[in-house]
Amino acid sequence: MALHWKLVFDTRDAPALADFWAAALEYEVEDPSALIERLLAAGHIGEDAVAEHRGRRIFRGYAAIRHPEDPFDELSGTGHGRRLLFQDVPEGKAAKNRLHLDVHSGPGGLDGLVARLESLGATRVREVDKGPAGRWWIMLDPEGNEFCAAG
Picture: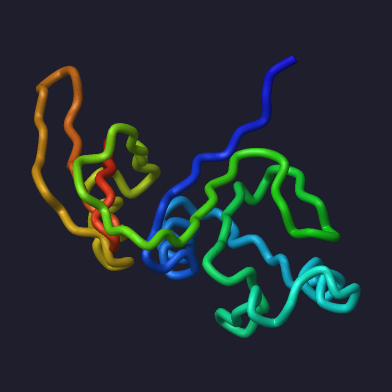
């Protein structure tokens, strides 16, 4: 049986980076507010574990996004499929990523994808053109994590 997984990003601002990647990938930001209310009411967590972001209660220092077509638990808001988790850590990014995402263009082509990602806060670093093997851009998300935008 295959294992479930999620890709986890260490961040300075989990909710903001989740918003960027949700928009970039056209995913949905998970809404844990119902779970948080139940945990608060039962005394399992305190208000210090909770923050507010875009009108929703979230776990302080955490946010997640999920593919909009994948199943999710309506009670917790947690996705059961393709999912990215963002967690705040005290240290900043120190070196090049050893793992990165490749985002592939849709109907607008590579130039349209790169322009859309830049409008969301990404930065172009370098174009790579391998002729018939492909063309892509190395880019940075708003916290400096490398990823590729490919045609």
